Length: 176
Ligand code: IMP
Ligand code: MG
Image (cartoon, rainbow, N blue to C red; front, side, top):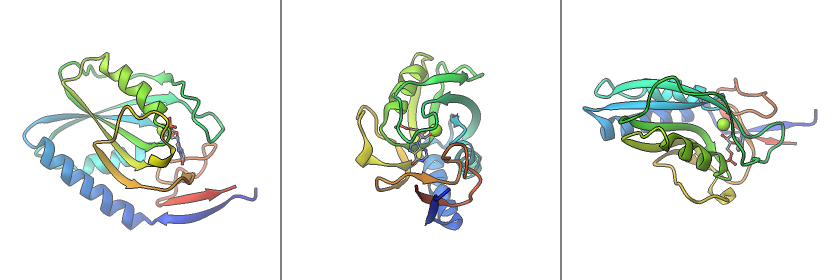
């Protein structure tokens, strides 16, 4: 109760930017293969749109992992728990980690370390949103980013607050 949401990016703006990212990834990986790694649940919407924006010139496969890092608060604990692991081997593959948002960078740092143990040929990062002002762990910068945003808590397009708002087609800032 008492929460208000304000539109930041409407569905059309989101779709246009995802299309641009898909085109860029298509150019960068044309003629090769790419394994998209989706971090559930937040990145699920982005992953399905992004994968369809990547052209047939790239041989795409998808895998999903589910991790917990946030709980019911709006601060990252920095500890990730793997609830569901990948099912495909990554060894020798070109991989792209698809994230909803990079905030403190703690989750990303842990994930990269974990994925590198699987010996991919390459591992790049694609984040739909980036909040650089919030960064605490500076080890990785996204190779592809949809939008850089200010220090606001956002919901929609997969992003939640206590599991709600994921279904909104646009991105909204949340005021409590
Ligand atoms: P980090 O470890 O602080 O970078 O947090 C990354 C994770 O926290 C993201 O994958 C999201 O699940 C969640 N998160 C961070 N900022 C937001 C936000 O503004 N809205 C919703 N979820 C967020
Ligand atoms: Mg997430």
